Image 1 (spheres, rainbow, N blue to C red):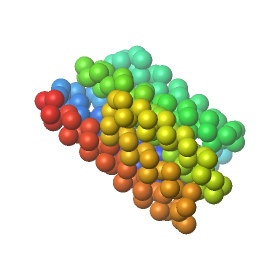
Image 2 (tube, rainbow, N blue to C red):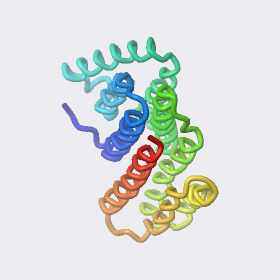
Image 3 (cartoon, one colour):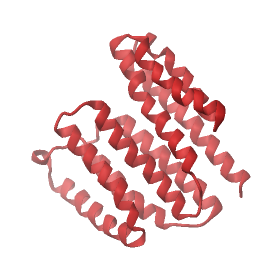
Length: 212
């Protein structure tokens, strides 16, 4: 299998899935969530491949994705919305549309997937889903500030920072992204992003145990 070049996609999706599984299983046992997320990971493995690059392994992943998508829609029909957003993100990428659109649709699908998964388990995550999206989307601007070496691109991250003061305080860590334009290696940003999102995931897991 060809591994996606979008390592950030793998890490972000995996950590989001971790929030869903531990948060929901700690409150209400719901193993159907695994079924919902199987097509997501199957699609992520195919995200960088265009139709001409598809092989037997790709065909198997597509088959698995379709089968579990059907199961998911039968269990909870609204799950088709994030699936469609993921597919739109795939089309945008291979049509060479702006990275902002690719990230916007992909992250919208991912965060909506988190929201629906938890909602299906009877957990209200509406406010935090909005903040989560704003936070994750901020990485696009922070990386742009690194590439262009312009501080102005990173100013978007003042939005989740300001909202975190009013609502969920953990997102205040978005302030660290204001320094990315000074980084020398893109790998350092990847490491920093993984650490920051891991902190957010640990926070929500901790909160889930308090609400048990």
